[in-house]
Length: 339
Image (cartoon, rainbow, N blue to C red; front, side, top):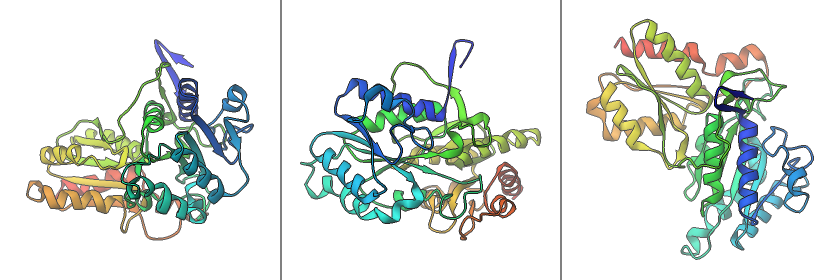
């Protein structure tokens, strides 16, 4: 699909194109995971790769996350560049030893003599009634672990550019993609799930947040779906005469403190919005950075908006009740600028 001179892709097609182009460029890149082959990934992230590269480079695995993530770690240590998919981030519990004791630490414990150039991609997020074990984001769980780069792109453009950067990186990268931003036909359609994506390969830095809307009255920091909720809220705030600056965090680890602090020093108010749990989450981390380094630039206490500390409900009304959305962001920002 193209509009004018811009080629438009969904999130899943942007990801799959990034992986395909890197597999064409580098024979050491290969893909493993459950249903990543013939099926193309249940969220479409490997669509068309099996037909293009065959079963040697696009490998369907048994339901054994510990086994195939461990195999990917071994392949990366030997110089390959695996892209491995953990189907739902909620399933990390069965394979966390491979992730936080091996993937995150081998390059450190070897004094840098063993590089681990692998990408672990995983689907996150709720909003479509998939209940407590299939709807979490768990951003902070992984951002908390030293030794991992953790990214969470919000647009098709960044999904492609950050995936290419992740595959070329010599460090292990956890690549979290949001299901609702994949543009899949069986989910509710979202305008944010489709966007301009250049055909040629390009990279997007793995350590930079992005100011996606400039403003002067309040800074709103969002992650993935919450960035889009913040943008919608900002448009509504503008009709009230409030100009919100919106930051898409994109990189959870390392955290781009500079972009956050520069914005807060301009607007003097901060609202952080997250689809993860409130306690011990990314909202707390961003708030702590600002409290430590820009406290006296604030005109009002920091506000945080996230999922209350309960499992994600299966019931649609209850799920909608716990998830932040544009209306809740608008109300929180209005209260903040009124202080």
